Image (cartoon, rainbow, N blue to C red; front, top):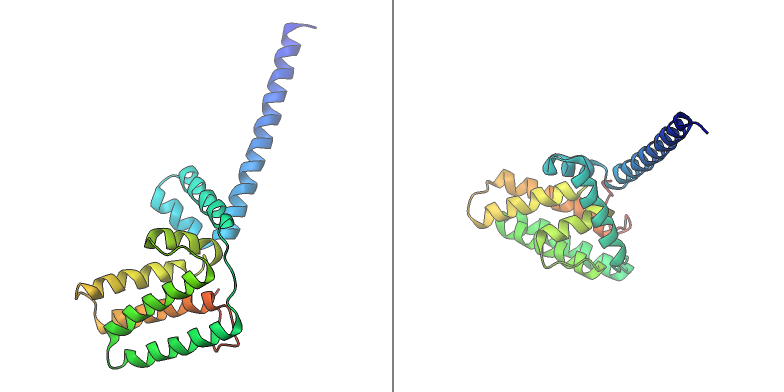
Length: 184
């Protein structure tokens, strides 16, 4: 065969390989977008690089697969729902205390379900795989809780924190029977 035929064949092979690689990358990107929802865009923006963000999200997904996340039995869901109602009732008289208790209660539910809870950023990353629609609420609530601890949160901020914690709490509790509504 002529050398130019080999060159054409090589170029065709390269084009096919590039097309397949592009299709695989698009499929992975679509899977990550479907899995992470708004968290995908937030991570891309925070990283400033789509590939880095996708690598991080894929790592979160793999880490989550290694965790033993379980549903809560009905009696525990009912107990936590009752605890939440108590936290909400205390908000009227002691909003900062109620926000701190809400943060603690959300962490307790996460721990009970099997999420590691030692580090907030890791906790948020882990929960973003299963609850991408509300993980931003969790970050906002936690930020307000931190500002409250430093004396820099208004009552309206604290009210917003409770709303944000409630959205994640409902998702984590995972039961409409417990008087919650899913926000996803």
